[in-house]
Length: 144
Image 1 (cartoon, rainbow, N blue to C red):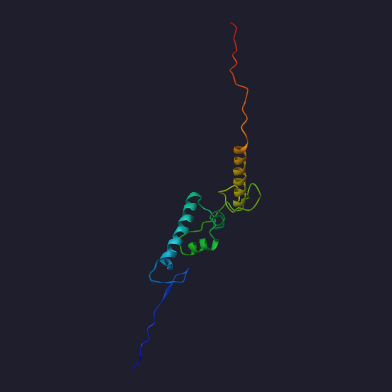
Image 2: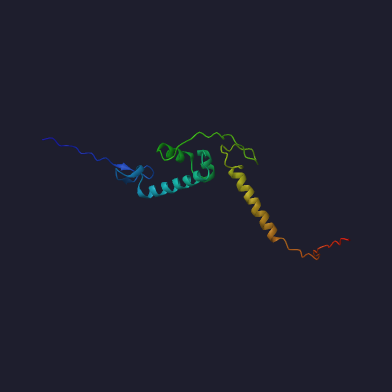
């Protein structure tokens, strides 16, 4: 009598390598699925606000690596469309932006925001000078 060998097909999570059900959605465990969906929602919301953004721009603005965005493209969840506004330069430092949605690169935006906050705090800390002069209306008499 011959023995039959049975092999179990084990599927693991793409991210954390936990054993998961063979029929799980996108090949992730429950915890990783929640995290992937949160990342996808951030990308989707950004694309609603800035349609046609590139993967490089998403990486700059959302700190989501390009390979994660490309994985969504491979999975069919995102679609790449040609962007005719390539090679746009930052108006402050001249860095290549690869997007027409923003005028400044993230580092310049951060620096300008930091400078603005410093200016606000400097204005708030300066002592207020009381003005002694007062404004009045000047009346003109028209002679008939």
